[in-house]
Length: 452
Image 1 (cartoon, rainbow, N blue to C red):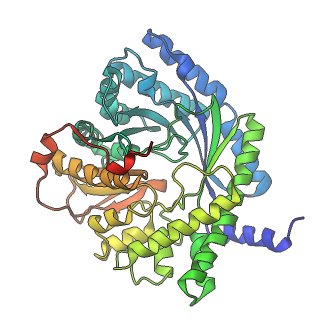
Image 2: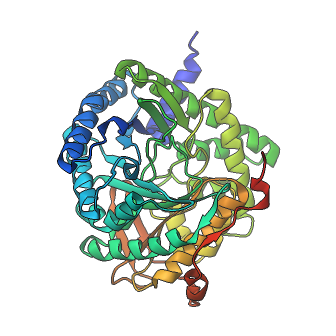
């Protein structure tokens, strides 16, 4: 039986506390699109995506109207295209990216993910060609997102791939320089990448997934902040219970939307991603949650401990609300997409080193970090290697989405608009890791990877 108080509470979450479903993402397998003929491959990819996801946007809008729950994004993820590209050259992969763009435009979706490669232990010729295509592909499209997995706890870290990614990020920044290097905002480098992530830019449809699937990403930092403020001056054990109960309620909304979307689209329900995904809107901030917990500013000593508690409580509450939790699931800390993070950087409380420490206990990693445009490739590689090593050593997903904004220097700002927000250019250490990066090869897997 429905409880009137629960209904009123959910209405308040939506209208006053920025609760929304951040994304409904349909994953689509492209394995049956393989063809040695480039034009035939592109046509099959376009036809399958537009046929399978034809009703994705309209169904999302129907659910929004029926339940009054905002669904911010409707997205598609596809099989990592390096796995289906076969003999495509880098130019051929650019053409395939343009095909994905046309399909996304036809569907009216916000983004399409899966211009991706899995190179954590080595590269095939197809992987190399796809990586070579990334800068042009992201420069020539608006909606296509790219990801590259360069490490796993089981395989170790592919430093040759990281070295290449430094160059690719710099090229992408240059080619999209007229838009403040926005191409880099659509490119993410992973360790231990999940195969069912509904969030961009890292979403793709993994090889262990069904023909098609519906994954949903929830949000709700504002809801958690409000709950913490209402809890008052309680101890941390009681505060963890408040966060758990709030995460349960948020996830139940996600479970409802996911199940309903799957039913209406006649597509299996995959997972609910529990991630607290912030926006640039005031009050919809993970940094604000940490400050409501008692920190004078995000970045203060104690920030990592507060974030660890938040992340754990969110997961514990979420798994009670859904039997199928996946993706990234936790708290996101992207700088440009979180008004509180931006404020903490501006006041000098939050550095890239502190952000790196925080990523050891939360979802994803160094996300939407803007750095000076003249940052050398090897420094970008060092940033990636540091973050990726946290994921490998801790058997967790970590990632880097770094933006060397062309022509910008420390203290400047980039502005992308929408959910991508704006970001201050952050300071980096002036010392070079070039000789270390040039060694190449693989950093071996940690000893605790040997669990068989």
